[in-house]
Amino acid sequence: MKLLVTGAAGFIGMHSCKRLLEAGHEVLGIDDLNAYYDPALKQARLEQLRPLPGFAFRKLDVADEAAMSALFAGSRFDAVLHLAAQVGVRYSLENPMAYVSSNVAGFLNVLEGCRKAGIAHLCYASSSSVYGANIELPFREDQRVDAPISLYAATKRANELMAECYGRLYGVPCTGLRFFTVYGPWGRPDMAPFLFTRAILEGRPIRLFNGGDMGRDFTYIDDIVDAVVQLLERPHPGAGAGEKTRLFNLGLGALVNLREFVRALERELGRSARIELAPMQAGDMRETCASTERLRAAIGYAPATPLQEGVARFIAWYRAHYAGANA
Image (cartoon, rainbow, N blue to C red):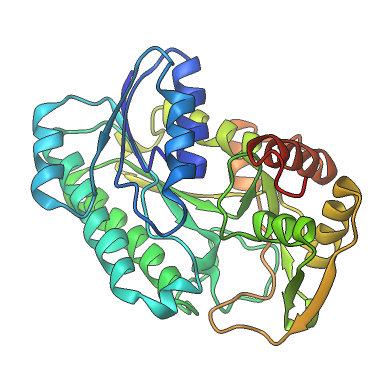
């Protein structure tokens, strides 16, 4: 298949492109390489992809309506994996317009391109953040998600509703991927595994919010990509019967307390963390945990990477990539 992957220089984007290329697909990756976090890391991810047969890259912002329209008009794609987005819950409190531009206008440009080009399948990134104020764990796809607690979450829920609309109106087959907390090599520097590792190695304190009473469904990148690729490659089973949209949780299905995650890092690094306890931050969710029953039924999903093994792989990558940086 010839595939378009947006956000190809991102964490999940790079790993997904690599797996798709190894499976023999042709991939055009796009990314605007913005400076939300270190663009050098994004360029380094791209360098992992450039030598692989079948890969091409264009620097392109999904929020650029004219450029996106020209992209779909000038190329034929069998399917689209849309991962480009302005990420980060806390940053949405500081720069809300970036989220509207990338996550809402950018997603509309992708939907319009898919509609006009007759794309057979669009898989797009949503987020566990859409569960917002829900407290019933594990989170299930059939729960109400009308109480977001951050603008980031609101834009991701908007994406799901927009996809539903385009499915009903225009028959665009869409699959929404509600990612939980993904970690592993090449991870984002604004997320806890990266932040905590760097701080521990540099002897700086790490901050645990809500007095450390936080829990996340930490899921290793390889397990996430297994699910992404299988869902993208498989025809949408309901597309021929009027069902144009579907949603899946992509997580491990286990709740890990943040203190437990810190202990896993300490064991692998051979160093103790200096911990500062802080109040709950605006926009944060106290706990997230995915029900994966729907995903298991669809593709036989069975994540296989234990937490300590995943942490070990992340630390090994971090020490290699940032060789000499207090490692």
